[in-house]
Length: 325
Image (tube, rainbow, N blue to C red; front, side):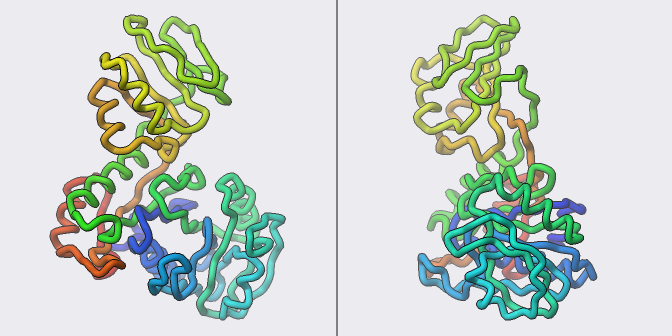
C-alpha cells in the first residue's frame, strides 16, 4: 500500500499526529520518497512549527531526518537555511515571520536533508500555498502541529494523514479509542451555515428566527430543528453546560468551522451524542489514511499486528504501519 495512492491527487496534504513520537515525520518522509519514486518533483514542503532536527528539542529523543529531492520546493525560516544540506536556489522571501526569522522559499538543486519551520498561524498557509503554486508546485505537504486538535483548515481542499502510536498511552485500547475519536472529528459531515452570522455564537431556529451573542443561548425543546453555529471552538466547559439540564437534545445540530474546533474530551462528546446532539462542520477535510507506530519513546511497545488489526476495525480510513509496511 502506498500513501501517495491514498491521497488520490489531493493538492494539499496535512500530516497530523496524536502525540509526539507517533510516526508523523516518518509518514511524511515516506510520502516525500514516494513522490520522488513516481517522478513527481513539483512538490512543496513546509511545517507548522519546526521539524527535521535530529533530536526532539523537548523530549531529547531521536527524530527521523527529512530528506528532500532535487527539484522539490521547501519553505523554512531563514535561521535554519544553514542547517539544510542541499544546494538550493532561493526563490522568494515571504513576509511571514517565525521566531527563527522570515520564512524563505527555496528549490532544492540537489538531494539532501532539510529542517523546516514554517508559519505557526494556519491562516498564513493560504498565501504561502499561493506562492508555492506560482513556482510550479502541484502538491503541498504540510507537517502539522502535534495534536489531533491542531487546525486542519489548511487542508480543507485536500487531505490529511493522522499518525498515532504507543507513545500516546500505555493502554492499547485507549490509544485505539482516542485515535478513532480524532478520526471521527476529521470526518464529520459538511453543512452550510443557515444564515450570514459567522462571527459570533448564533442559534438558528427552524422558524427562521435567530439569536446571537457571546454565550450559548438557552435551548428550548419543541421548536423544531435548531442549529447552533459557533464562530470559535466548543470547549469542554461549554459542552458540559449543555449536558447539565439532563434533557434530550435531538433537535440540535452544533456547527463549527472544522473538526479541530471541537475541544471536548471524548467522553463528554459521546455524552452529547447520547442526548441526541448532532455535529457538522463548515469546512471538511478528507482523512486519507491513519498510520500506526507500535513502539513508544518511553520504552514500551504494543504487538504490531494486534495494534494494526484493532485500529483497522475502529476507523473507516485505510490504516498502515509505516514503520514496517
